[in-house]
Image 1: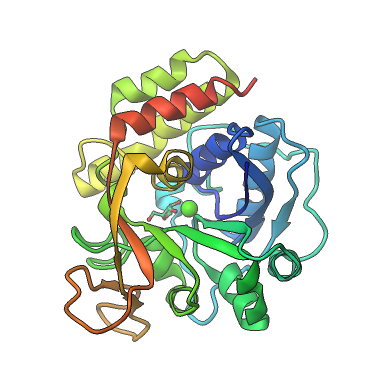
Image 2: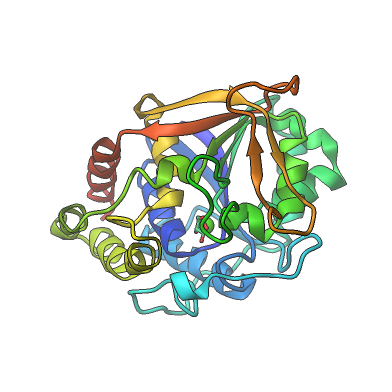
Length: 312
Ligand code: BDR
Ligand code: CA
């Protein structure tokens, strides 16, 4: 199985992503969850990650809390989308198992600096503050990274938090700037693809029909969470951004993209936080990321249901 660390800000769609990842033990060796402030404050995202660990019955996976604020900008949250405590649609609780000791940034540094060369996959499902700070404190950690797979950014159809910016990058553009300039292999799951892989009442009902706790939790969360994007953006269903990213890891052949150069606009102004994507190679800037634009939506929702059915 692929060894990976998931950096996350749960977050409704993060919860679905984590359930999917933790259900796929045969393919994914999840070494830790690291948390960051994003959709809601760090205390909530950390508690929520611990809740998911309990739902998935995976006490073997440590949860490290990381950065409570972005690198430079004023913090922003998305409680109107995800609920005041980050997981709309379900009852929250205080999980029994505590956080691991130490900060997520230090955990990333220690783990990646001593990892086998190019062995670890880092998945980021929130603002990239933790990974950027780890790279700043110890650039050597790049040696242990096989690939960074990130949910974030937007190009063809605009942003979800400003007309041009996607939430995760907008919430800490300086961090994403560090990541895109790191020279690491990066795969990006932007809104360009997540907005093509939408829920439908049938797809949510299919999850509920699984009949286990994971299926019910996923269906309850999605029923509540997709409302915002359907109303606000006029989409025919709700995108499950972060879970799409895990879908990519499990079934990369269901996705299509191309190598491009991506720059992040870190200047204050109307395009703050925009991912500037040289899709048609009109500059001489070398490609630094694979930008995914197409995915098999039905294949993804079938995969999600099959996998969640395996969580007892
Ligand atoms: C991203 O922003 C967050 O609100 C979601 O959890 C997802 O990671 C989508 O733009
Ligand atoms: Ca997220």
